[in-house]
Figure 1 (cartoon, rainbow, N blue to C red):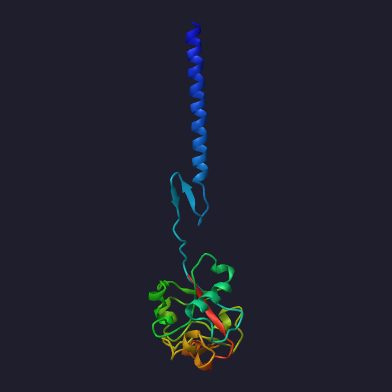
Figure 2: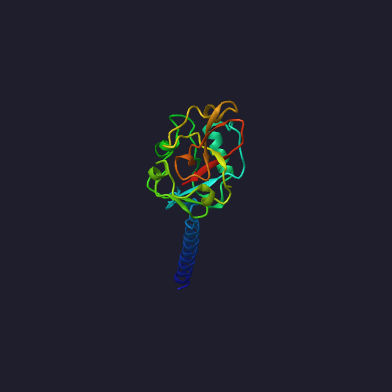
Length: 214
């Protein structure tokens, strides 16, 4: 009888230990699989990265600061936009809305940088200036940037390096690496083609940059 009781007690102890270990393991798995949107979280033996967020528009903004023509090429102008991006651009890809050369123009940003071609372009004031990328580069916009952007004064000029059709002008500031030469600049009051190309500006002038986030 004593032997039977001893065996039963050992069996119960073993089962109890097994249950405790199982509960601890399940709790750990549950904690490991808990995550927040946009952050990596772990499953046993795996690292899972959630898909990138999908946005319903392209955010359009302008820098607060002005810059000479020697901005470091495409990499440099993109970095400027990343540095000056507003809070609405958090979590998005950011690019300078500018033409660098014939192969890297505003017109072909949808091909070069996977900018969505079918989304409306909306400013930081939630004002739509174009219904899609083609509409943005058809030599006109719905409302002037003076009225659509919070930090754009009337009769301001900003760098574009771009002709009214979205194609690059002639070697804008040597691909934005030089303060000699010239580049196209847009007029903030315009809604016709002059919003992209109003004057030929010398590269030693300081001007704002336009940017997009998508």
